[in-house]
Length: 115
Length: 114
Image (cartoon, rainbow over all chains, first blue to last red; front, side):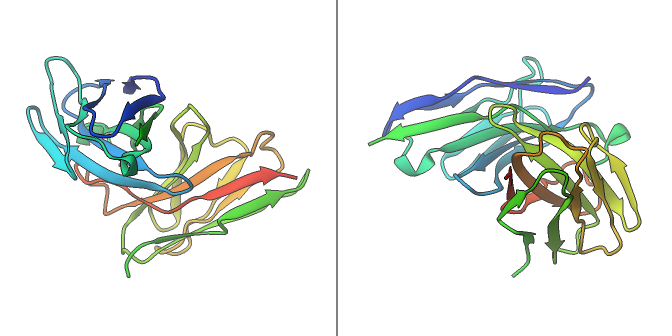
């Protein structure tokens, strides 16, 4: 079946540190991949997406590359800020032939950035 | 502004009571989804609807019910059969069911037991 595995948190970093949050997936075919961010007490916001192998999604200094060979979609940022403190979710949307628009989510990774 | 409105933001349920969470959208999206979020477990799908007057069970539908009488609205009822309803509930929408498009989320309703 389809699944997403994220690194466990919380991840605690100092401001301006480099961030990596690992995400690997299991799926047949070529799913679309997403990173969402959730700030305290709020819903999820799309951070970036990639729809085919070797695509790189980027937004607000965050990047993630769709790696088919390693079934990974790791999130990176070169220099984090306190305002990046949030929960980050990796998600996949299965291939069209079986899709109903459902998303499969990882368990989320909490990022804490200290000044 | 186009968006998804969930209400109320906080909701309390008494023992044996049914409660209904509202989700309204003006994005003209066809598909709507309800997720439950528990700490450390990510999001789990409760119900979804791809078209008016039709809906499907997700992974954890027991103890919940929905309706889709209008395109704009997809209310979720948490029934007394749901023995552990305390969670954060999120509603999401998707234009059609295009797989490479992201879902849009509301701001959620936090449900607690009195």
